[in-house]
Structure formats: structure tokens, C-alpha cells
Length: 142
Image (tube, rainbow, N blue to C red; front, top):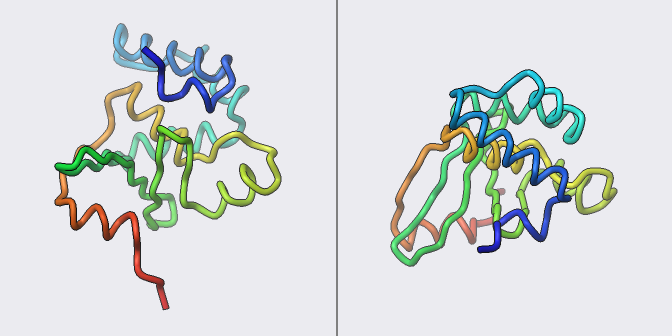
């Protein structure tokens, strides 16, 4: 079985997220050692992502056709679309820091998706195929 993170995250980051999941399953918390590891590997995004997870800002959205995406309510209140399968976020930080400058391999929203799955703090929402289409193909904001 291939993990959804395999092709997109460095091995050390993927291993750390596996340890976070294991720690949470065994102790219902993330150890201080793992928190330090998250901060070391992911930098300032780690604390921001943990805040988003604590605020239950991550929602896994599915529809009958089988499409799945994650909606993350950012600290500004704006929601962003994240795809963990291809490691993408619609936020400006992802476009700038990850895609353009290449100085980070994820934004706080994608990290929040991974952490919310590891800690089982992900909301779930099922919507119609038509609603999913509207999410995937938003009308231009004026």
C-alpha cells in the first residue's frame, strides 16, 4: 500500500507524521519530543497548523462520486481547498513559498490536514456531486 504522502513529503517528515499518529493513538496526545520534531522539520508552520487542528478547522469533504478534498479554515477566517493526494493548497502562502520560491514543502493548511488525520481531529462533511463541482470550479470573485 502506498501512502498518500509518499511521493510528496521527504522521508523524515513522513516518518515524523507516522510517529505523531502512533503517539496520539497510544497516549491521546502528542509528546513534547514530537512537538519539538514538528517545529524542527516544519518550522513556524508547525505551531500554526497545530492551532488550526485544535480549532477543528479541517474538514474532509466527500461526495457520492468518490471525490475527496479538505477544506481548511485559515486563521483569517477564509477557507482554503487542500488536496493531500497531490499535496496542494489554494492559499497564497502555498503559491508563493512552495511553488514560486521553493523554500518550503508545504503550508500550514496542508500540515494541518496531515496532523488532523493523525490526531483524528478532522471534521467530516458529505455534499452532493453538484456542490463538489461548485467547490472545485468556483466562480470568479468580483
